Each structure stands twice: as C-alpha cells, then as structure tokens.
Image (cartoon, rainbow, N blue to C red; front, side, top):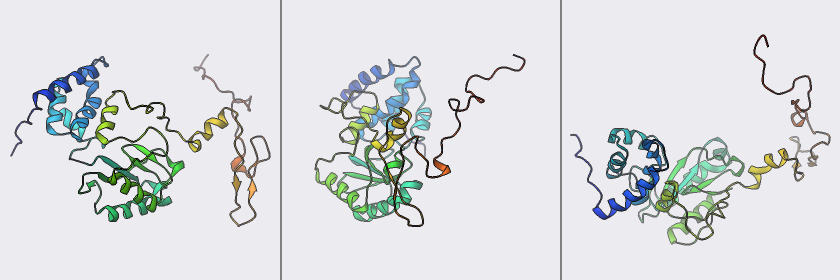
Length: 271
C-alpha cells in the first residue's frame, strides 16, 4: 500500500529549521543546489534522514519528495535509519584491507556484537565498512564521524570503540576534535564549528600525505631506508640529485629538462 504523507515537524522545530534552511538557500543562485546541505541539516536534527526531513527539503526547495528521495538514497553519507552517536567506519578497500582493515572489521563486529551498518544496543556506535578515504599512506584507517584514526590495529580499534561507548574523550590522529554525528551533520550543512580551537585544529593532512608537496617545492626530504628484496643490508636512499638506486627512481624527461619537447599550448593545424 502507498505510504501516507510524512508527518510534519513540531511547529517550534519547523520554525527553527526554516530559519536555518533559508540561510543555506540564500548562498545559491539556484535554490535546488541547496539540497545536499539541507539533507545534512535535517540529518543533524534526528540523526538520520527521515521521511519528514525529505518532505521538509522538498517544501523548502519546491521539489517533489521523489526528487529528494533520489538524492538522499544515492549518497551514503545520508542515513536512512536511526544510527549511533558515532559512525565508526573501517576502510576495507584494497590497501587498507591488505594492511589489516579486513581483520579490524571482523574483530570489531565480534567485539561489538553487530553486523555491517548496525548499531550497538546502547545507541553509541554504528559500525560499517567504507570505501577509500584517500588516506592510503596511513593504512589501515578507521574513521569516526569522518575524522581520521590512522595506522590502526584490531587492538587499538577495540580500545577506540570501548572509549567511545564509555564516554571518554577520544582524539583523532589529525584534524578537528571529535564531535557527535548530529553535530558533524550540522557542520557539513555549512554552519560554523563554534567549539573553541576546532577550526584551528582542522588541518587534516599528515606528513606522509605532504611529502610530494615538499619535494615539488624543492624541500629536502629525510633519508629513508631501502631494504633490498633479497635481504641485503639496508641502504640510505639518496637525496634528490644524487645517484639513483634503480631506473624506477630516475627522473623522467619533462618540459624543463627536455628542450626538444617543451610544454605549452599546441598550435592549430596550419598556424
């Protein structure tokens, strides 16, 4: 049977959300462009995107509920059912899986007594396996409410979820301090993070991620130890400009080093 129309928010909640929604919509020349942040806004109210939330978004943007539902069901960051205060995501994509992500996920399922996308009985933790979070240089990675916890092991991951359930203060490896999922959703809706020091601490890139940028700037990289695959003694990797260990490390021809093939716009035929 077709579902009845979704109930509306209570009057006071609706008035508060309308004020916030109008602020978000005013940022866009086309109101329907505000749909993604509005979905985060309603998610910050109830912890997931309800039929009432989708009806609210449709009313505010002049869309049909079908149009809103199509977007809300496409993106995995929008929850369709009640979930925990802390979304614990274990990356099980290729590199993290090989480095231990699969083992972490299996042990957390057993430790918490939940399956994928299920929530603990106390409502604190929702566990899920997630796709790549662009943090492969810190594999295996666990994310809590989209904040990074790098270089995890099954033991450290179990301590992490135990601390979350116990209400202890947990600090991400890098980035902003941890907050609840509802608070995270409001920030993603485009509202400022008003916690003291949160903005200043929100730089998320670690040294391993920035090494390429440092090399591009000509900054000296620290020597790294290279172990020969046949078990020979470790060697110090030479600094840029020194003799290379193998052809894989050799500099490639670029427009700066190969005058016969300069970079630049290609002329049209006949010019």
